[in-house]
Every structure is written in C-alpha cells, then in structure tokens.
Image 1: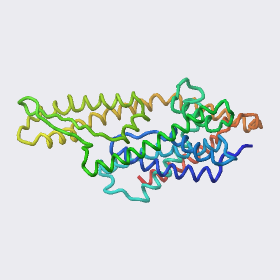
Image 2: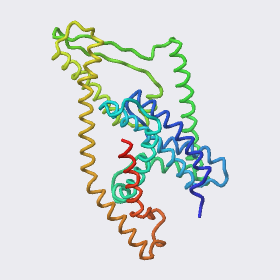
Image 3: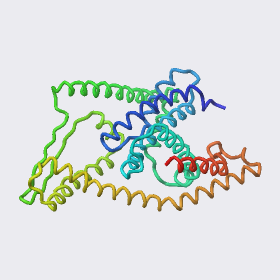
Image 4: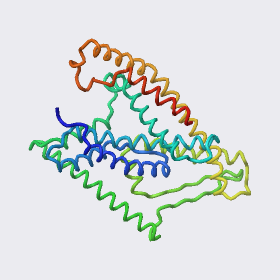
Length: 332
C-alpha cells in the first residue's frame, strides 16, 4: 500500500489552505468572486513533494484535496453577512463563526459522499478543472524520461506563478506611491430626467490572475452583469427617482446599493433554487448507490470493491450529518 494520508501531507495542505483562504476571502470581498484552489495547490504540492524521494501521487492528491477547502470555506463571506443584513446578528462572534465553518465543512464532506456517484462517476459532465488537476498530479508523479517535457512544463507553470506574484506585489507598491493610478472612475448624468450612470476601471494583476482561473465564461457573465447594471439599471431607476439635486456620484451609488444590487440578488436566488431542484434526482440516485455498496459490504464483498468505491458507510454519513446539523441549528 502506497502512502496516502501522511502527517507531512496534512501539514503542507494546511499551510497552503491558510494562505489560499486568506487570499480568497480578500478577493471575494473586493471583487465579489472567489477562485478554485485545486490546480494551484496541486502545482505547489508537486513542487514541494518532489524534494522527497518517497512522495507518491496519492500523497499529492491529499495535499491538493486539503488545500481545495480554501475555495469552499471562503464562501462564508457570502453567507454570514446575510445574518447581519437581516438583523439576526449585530456582529461577527468569533467562536460561533468558527464552529459554523467547522461543522459546515464536515457537512459538506458528508453530502459529497452520496452525490459523488450521481454527479461524478455516473455523469457525463466534463469537469475540465478536475481533469486538469489530475493531469498536474500525473505530471508531478512521473519519473520516466518520456514525461520529462511535461514535468518541465509543470515547473515552468510554477515559475510563472512566482513571477506573477512578484510583478503584482511590485505594481501594488508602485500604486501606493501614486506614481500610477490603478483606479479611474467617473459618474455622469444622462438627459434631463435625473438619470445617472458611471464607470470604474480598476487595474489589478491579482484580478487578472483570478480571471485566468475562473475562465472566460464567468468573466463574460460578470461583464454582461456590469453592463446591465450600469448601462440600464442605474440610469433607469435614477430616472424614475427624478432627483436632479443630489450629486451624480452619490445618487449613482445609492441607486446601485438600494435598487440594482437586489436585481442581482434575485438572479442568484433563482439560480440557487433551480440548482436545488435539479439535484433532487441525482441525490436520490446517489443514496441508492451508496446503500447498494453498504449491502455489498455487509454481505462480505467489501474487499472486492475497488478502493475508489469504498465510501464511508451511509449509516455513518447519516449519523454524522444529523449530529452536525443539530448544533448548527442551535448556533444560528
């Protein structure tokens, strides 16, 4: 049996998770989106573990799996502020937030077990990012000469990440000296009915990197949303208000905060409900598959199952899920 879950791998994964979670939370609060950490975590893990002779692809996979939690845990910035907005909380209590994150993370793992068969093994979804992450891990574990060019390509990718970080840091320092302007914004009035609009161009190498990670489709969706919001939403609602006395910048910001932003929130709500409805059938199918595997294990056929099919027993999943949901309900 090759080494998979090791103390070394867990420590490396935890360190990467801390760094990526901080970065993801920062950019989530700044730009409104987060990036997946699996691929960069796999690249960093590959670079670190290649210095150990006994490193395996399974250990690399554990590191990137631990580090991928940074992409999901950072989504807490989209959840907990809602408790402030509805008046349920007046501040962010540290320990309450900590336990919500911890128990919510365990619940996420438990939910993924019955969903894996339906959404991964029994699905034709391409999962391009997962495939790319797997290829990175394969390159990192290849010691054959025929894979030498691929390994070199992976090292070049890591070097590009390091140089990108250095250039972004230097640019941030230069901007702070005010030698360059990183932000160009202007608001203006349209017509005589009090309509306002504006634009805000912000240059950030970090956001360019996020754009590369999230892909073209997400970037285009955000661009279209910005054009709809500031090209139609803000002018339309500000014209309805007919306020010609308030400064254009103040009116534009107020209209966006109190009117247009809720249009986007509504779109997010509809997409969330639609996603839940689409998940009903896959969840039922996943539960059926998990129960079938549990019956095979009870019948003494568990050893014949491939290691990738040996899930945590569905009974244990149900108990852990219930145990986690009760304190979360009490905390909230």
